[in-house]
Amino acid sequence: MAIAEMKRIGLIIMRRDHDRLLKFAQRLGCVQVTQTEVPEELMLRKESARAAEIEAEIARYQWAIRKLVKYDPVKQSMFSALPEVSVDDLEGSDLKGAEQVIQQAEELERRAGDLRGQESRLHVAIEQLTPWLQLDIPTEINHNTQSVTIFTGTVTANGLKELMAAWSGQAAVIRALEPVKDLQHFWAAVYLPEATRFLQDLQEIGFQQISLPEGQGTPQAQREAAEKALEALAEKQKALEEDLRKLAEQLPVLRLGYETLKAEYAREEAQGRMAHTATASLLQGWVPALAAPGVEAAIKERFPEAAISFFDPQEGEEPPVLLRNHPVTAPFESIITGFSMPHPSSLDPTAVMMPFFACFFGMMVSDAGYGLMMALLVPILIKLMKPSKGGRKLFWIVGIGGIFTVFWGAMYNTWFGFAPWPTVFDPVNNSLPVMALCIGLGALHLFTGLGLGAYLNIRRGQFLDAIYDQFSWFSLVVGLGLLLLPQTAELGKWMALAGAGIILVTAGRGKSNNPFKRLLSGLGALYNVSGWLSDLLSYMRLFGMGLATGVIGMVINLLVGMVMQNGIIGIIIGIPLFVGGHLFNAAINVLGAYVHSSRLQYIEFFGKFYEEGGTAFMPLGYSPRYVRVQDAS
Image (cartoon, rainbow, N blue to C red; front, side, top):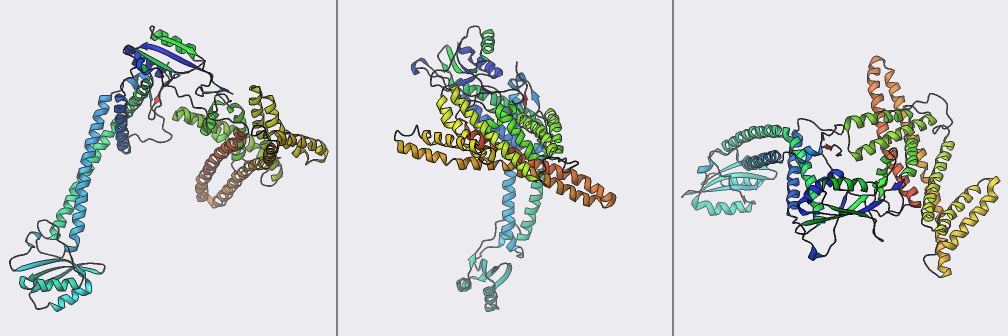
């Protein structure tokens, strides 16, 4: 349980060597480069144009990868192990080859855009031609002449019937075409002297002029030509898809190039935080104290001309936070970082929190069969999938939680929903002992949080604060609990009164010198007793979720038993139903156990002592997305 001690690093190197230095520091992975503050007249920072160029290139790589990934011949899944590469492979990847792949992808995308544009235009043309398909007059001759005026458009359906009846036998040819709801498309050829009167009649029945689409031949012939063109476009699109599928074979080159550029971008950002003169470069940053001697020796060996020094943080300076724990408890650091980093002057509660988290996780999953499955599968999955560092931590949390689940599942006598023998703790048939156990563990958890708060105060020499803020609440809450038993009621009364008195007098000590206001603050603080009751009741979720897991497992077994009574067919159906049902039950309860165990830490436990506000230690290194970088020595 520790926050790693940090040392400041100051390093001066010849400017010609600063690029090599940053590559070397990136391999070391334990140097965080910070902004160098020196007088402006003594400094000439490097141009940052390269960083902007790299950022733009990374965006192109991301686009190309997203474009080609659906054609990837090697299908990726959450269970697929990322390919391993060495640092030398990463820094020496074929960026020229990757650039050619991107250019080909961009050309294919341009062609695809042209095809989509053509397809869209053809669909629009077909849609525009549809109302005129019954018209057997070629479009190129369908226009006004010296003696005839052509009208095309829509009118109301009833109006067109009346118009055709009114103009029957007159110098006009009217053809009703495609109806659209209450409107009717029509075509009319009218003798020129009658055109004005015909137009007036049209306007009385809601005439909306619509010109025929431009083209050659009848509308039906134009539509058939457009459909043939669409078929030709479909063939071109298939060919283009095949080109993309072939290009997707180069995805490993693209992914490696992407990681190379990301690594270079990290170095460019770091050099932007350094200071540079015409001949020298200055790097400042943070290094874990334990790593400082090794870093100094390695840099001195590689860069004999460099001047390097380590020193303690200055007063008021907050170093970044690096959590350092035993390998067994280290995976649970992700629970801490998922909340917030502790303040550098505070403490890392991982080692104290770990047994509580795993215990609560096991009580909520509460099936020994599920626990065995998790404990056995997690190492296998880590071996096969080779997840990232963060992914490994999450896997190990589930694996360690599986071990605790075996214990609590055995205590509850639940094995894949079966209860083969009697047990003391039976959440279904005798729930009160289990509830009492959950409340007791909750009280222990809360008092441990109080103890950590007292430890922080004592470590800082604030002994009275430990009495005022922690031991007073311990006395009050324990005293109230002892009041419930006749044998301890007298002791509990005096403990509760002592604790309440201390809180009443001291809770407002830092807020005002006015005794009346301090007393009011004390009364307000005493009201927090209800918060303690609420916190204790929160631990009933351990009982509720454990009960839910067992009941759902029993229901699954009951349903499977009913199915398997129907002979061989029932057995064939029942086996996958049993496996699938319990896998589903395990999955949803593992997820719920993780979330609710985290909540008990964040709200109930951390609320008693946790001091947040630290910033994570972010050394210059590699943060790959598509590959695993082998550890550099």
